[in-house]
Image 1 (cartoon, rainbow, N blue to C red):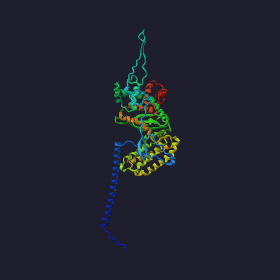
Image 2 (image 1 turned 90 degrees about the vertical axis):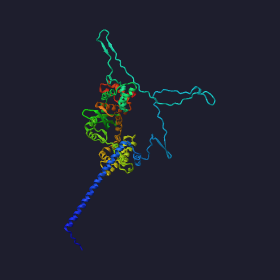
Image 3 (image 1 turned 90 degrees about the horizontal axis):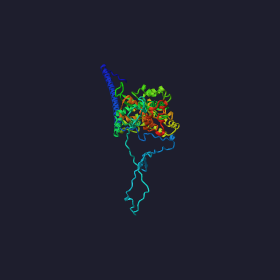
Image 4 (image 1 turned 180 degrees about the horizontal axis):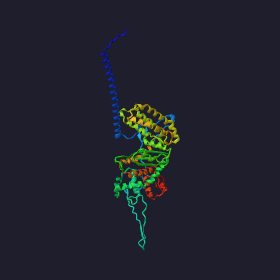
Length: 526
């Protein structure tokens, strides 16, 4: 039988109060749990940033990983039964149960170098046989060679301009005109200017150090004079730079990247304001490396670098947004860089304590998959474009599908502000550009080539630190362009700059300047 329970009003009010108190307690506990989760997430992010900063400051800078993470594939249906050949320059060879280093072989000295023969003979008193006392006869020599260095030698070229006068009057006076020079009345000759330019822009030696080096050999020239000379020759080469840029913009494939540069004296800008040096290079046709200075890196400034590019050209860049605007405006095929994607996941992996790293770490899984893409490119490096494209469609496309599936599966469970979250965000944003390279066997998978082209500037910047003026920055960009383009065409930069500086003052027409491009230099002078 049902039991009737009578509750007084006071008891009902007490029960409702207890219920409300319990509910409030649960809500408070839930809020505390949420706050704890937030604080824990913020703590984890702070620890991750701290580990990333420590890695950046004190850790190994290389992004290379072990052979297992390079993802060297061996699927039979893709590669066939053949094995990958061993690298010829491998420093070790496996012998039975242990590893033994190969014996090194000294590289022979250049046979074209001049040689001074120093003959070493036994004294006359020792040229006899210890057994029977007969005189020894010469039957050959043992030859060993050492490289010797003759210090730099300076000389002064004295120009004597002959003056002529009429013996019968005082009006018929003539003076031989001065030869055309790249710096009229300049103190430094063309070969000296080329030597200084290659010292700074090829080997990263600051001008004040070169001034000190010249003083050792008797050339007491101030660093200010040298710097002014570099600015003048850099700006004087602008017509050749313009022709190089025109040829670059006409190429079918262009790489682009940028790095920071500090200019101390620029109107309307503080000395510590960051400026930029842009690097562009061709991926097809004649090798060209162009460097351009800009006070910033917005879309309007970047647009100047591509004015005149032909529609339908291919552009390889990182994920910087202005490149997207450039690609849309000029209707370019825009490719994404897989090295930049991989870099995010390398940083995420490095931020994890070594004790906590496993093969199933999400960042490591992405690195392994991306490594398979690059392994395919390494294997097909010497193949024809058609054969490489077949490999990309049959193998790389499946790896891309695996990367895409893993990205969609893990995106919702990763904190967006973490290093791994930033990597996933970048991967999602760049995905349409990242997968486009499989459409053509000639298209690159990364922007590494351009990063390698801009590296000499970054290395040199550690020594000379900044440019004093805007003219100096533009002149440096021009000279870097000439040096790196000469190197890309297999020409010694010193010889090219000497040849260019001697002929540049004589050029008058567009054809004259066209004849001064690096690949037009006579082969016997390179």
